[in-house]
Length: 456
Ligand SMILES: Cc1cc2nc3c(=O)[nH]c(=O)nc-3n(C[C@H](O)[C@H](O)[C@H](O)COP(=O)(O)OP(=O)(O)OC[C@H]3O[C@@H](n4cnc5c(N)ncnc54)[C@H](O)[C@@H]3O)c2cc1C
Image 1 (tube, protein in one colour):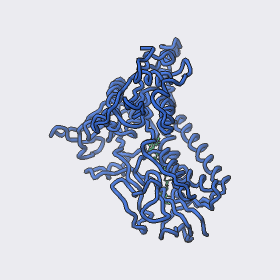
Image 2 (cartoon, helix red, strand yellow):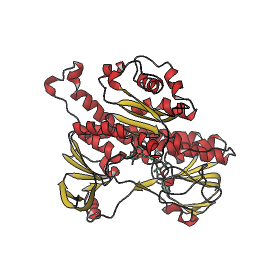
Image 3 (cartoon, helix red, strand yellow):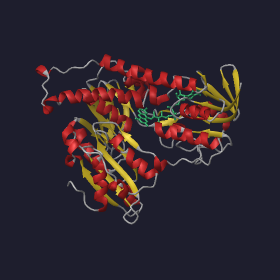
Image 4 (cartoon, protein in one colour):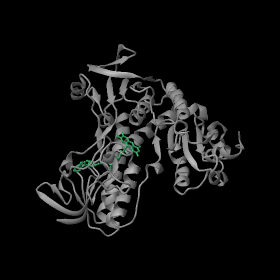
């Protein structure tokens, strides 16, 4: 069989590229060994957010009294099996939807493992598929570091990655999380909501290093309220039956827990195309601004490039690659990609942190507006957090935005659009925002960067 474009991997990078390619009239095939939707829909973004929603509802019930609502005899309870079932239903609805979209757009899907023979041929079962263009979208897998006892304890089911924990059959009483990154934090807050005692062990001197310091410090205070313990500058040295051993300040410590989540990062899946001898870096496959590799007509998108391991970045890269194949001068910039952490509250950001601006001697002015001064946040009873913006004091260019709020991921969208369309802080400040809305805090923060906010 001969195709215009063959795509290896059907995650948010691969399946979006496949649909876009078919929309532009190309004959496209997608090779996916598991369920389409990739890590994001099946094991990542969507299942975690679905479980976090159940946690959010529980948290709301636990605070019902503060809204004047009585829960009889404080009898709030939950059923983890039903929560898991809801998660499975959401995943199925979405992955079925993607299957339908691929079919409607005429994308041929090969539900098998694909092995690249060369830039124009991929082996699937006993067939050799031929293509003019090849897009590699094989994603990434959890890093399993060399730690004494780790492999044995993973085999026993005591230590697991996000995959195991997502389907864990009960709420553990105690959970140790190795790694204080985004995935570790989201699981920590998820289980803490169901009263699990969580301890995070982090090797660096702080958790969530890419996050702006002001946001992290405020977030750390909230994690404390959730009774999440964080041990930093600690190196895990051994995993025993029901205990993690780590070194801190030259001393050996040990912590016991029911289970352990290993979340120390992801590494690109390169095995299926070693025959191509592509240029790679520590992060993943090296690509140019059009997502083309060092081999002409071979593209790599998403987590396999290690650029920004986010679903929307993978999809944006997929669209860029297809548009470039179609002859457009399409380019992709990491600078335009927002990030988020979906906890209680959420963190969302784009662009420079204040620390980066300082470090790189970039002139900036920052402005912060607390949700406590926002009417809608008060009405909602969700006043933890603030909006912080950084601008170039001479041009008004938006250098960065950092939001801590229950709906931070949605609030950030206007700043993403502003940056993409080269709007200034003044444009956000002068745009009339709905009242009452939490989005007024974004406007007030922008006003504060230029003059003075009205409501503080
Ligand atoms: C717990 C967790 C939570 C996350 N939450 C978020 C979030 O909230 N927001 C966000 O933006 N990102 C989130 N991410 C990251 C997000 O899931 C990834 O960035 C995204 O899935 C990357 O998309 P991709 O298409 O590059 O790769 P993937 O989604 O990994 O898809 C790659 C696909 O390729 C297939 N494949 C690989 N090799 C072959 C082969 N040889 N033959 C056939 N098929 C193959 C795999 O089966 C897989 O389906 C999360 C990740 C995790 C683990």
